[in-house]
Image 1: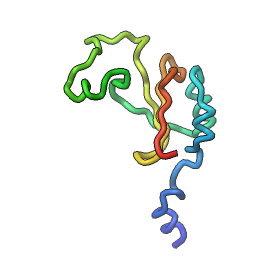
Image 2 (image 1 turned 90 degrees about the vertical axis):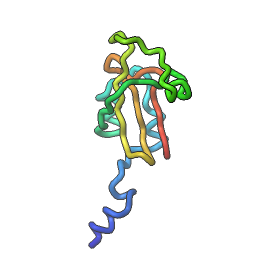
Image 3 (image 1 turned 120 degrees about the vertical axis):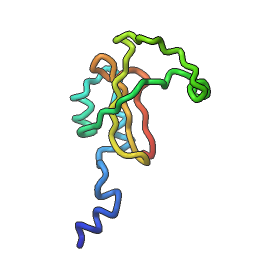
Length: 106
């Protein structure tokens, strides 16, 4: 019975490492292994990095992305948490990219 109750309470099933103190430990240049030592195992996100463009322009379909983006500018996103509480980090060249640490609900 206690197990079922715990499944119904998000705090029981959430990642206890998702704290403001832990996100403050994440710095540009850290490797995924170093980040996972702080936050635990993350989930890979797929898709293009459109965060540098205007959200209004993006909504209209206007972007400045080239048809063949260079490998050096590609960002691989990792995420810890769910839609209401998460940490999202962009990695470039296997290291945390500057300005690519996002959080919600912490």
